[in-house]
Image (tube, rainbow, N blue to C red):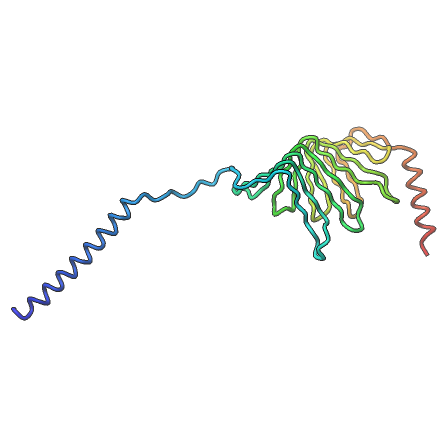
Length: 207
């Protein structure tokens, strides 16, 4: 029995040490305050004033430009809210377009820009096309597709012709314009004649 006593004492000391260590760790964990998980709220995490954002194509050529007076990024939606926004599309082979609005939201990794408040898109005139203007309370730009559309009432002015309707879509690559639920359409005879003349000129120039 005397031979076993040191072993028993050692085992008891080891058990006491384990229990004491566990108790100390538990006490320390309860005593130290732990910050609760951060609440994700719609609050900006960074901002910029008088900013300019430029996107390029695979060759490094600038094709889209977005600028404004003030920008805020919101982590909960990973979106950017912009004051006094101006967007410029300058893809090679497509007419230059300029868009503006009081405010705008850029999301979906920059592939969508929702412009609100006096939203206006202007397509510059070139040798083959008259200028095009689209005005609405809300216009949605898809920079990667070079498309603008809205489900809201819109006024479209193409040269001397005007169209009022609810909902429209314009593809700047194909130059196709669709106006849905048109309520007031005024087609200028001058525009019709000019389109015929330009179409005739292109046909004559073809070999």
